[in-house]
Image (tube, rainbow, N blue to C red; front, side, top):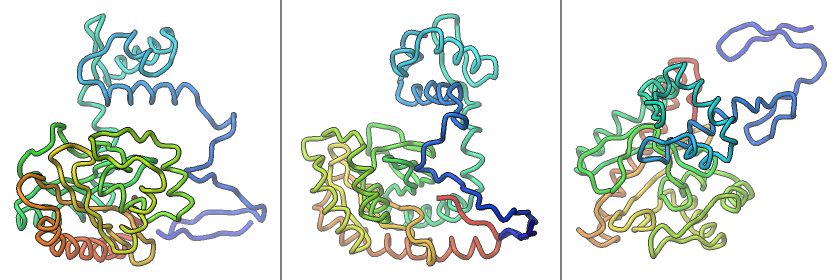
Length: 290
């Protein structure tokens, strides 16, 4: 048995036998998969897409669970104060925010990107955001808001389909070609507006172009009236770790005018973000999570 040191200096012991650690894309075997935990997460996720409190029947229908299973999950969430009920309707409590915000506010990416987004938003007088890729969705990890131009509210934790967003396309551009195709083929790709691109081959071509030139512009494919320009945050050793974007109203200027106005400061901010992430890792001895 040998003694090894981790990156942060902690001592670990390893036997000569190889130890396999599943990657995020590998499915756990039956002994490792906790079905009750998976069902509980399904219930939590079902509330993310609900605009109003839900009944037991609503939750069961949204999750595909039996009423009995859904009832057990809901009662557990209520008992732990992650949900509340009047006896018929269920709603999540603010306690659920503690499950992720604490991590993302201290994982490096949020710390580094938030002040950069504020500066970029002030320079352009436009809302700016940062996100990471989780499966086939982008998850917002930082945001600087100037004025509301979308129907939906965006904040840390917001999830949007990667295929139809500018940040999603530059994040997908950071993957190997086979993984890009796998994610797109597995994803739901509805036509969110009349101009949304949904075809696999067309999307792969757009993503490849975004990866090659280091930015992309999406014009009203996610929501009518919304235009967004994004650039990747590239770590010098690990490639794309996040994306940042600038969102503008599509009715105020042409796509070319948006590109010429927004892209230079956006790319400068993205390049500075990549350097800052690497510097943060060196100073803390911890890798950012992205």
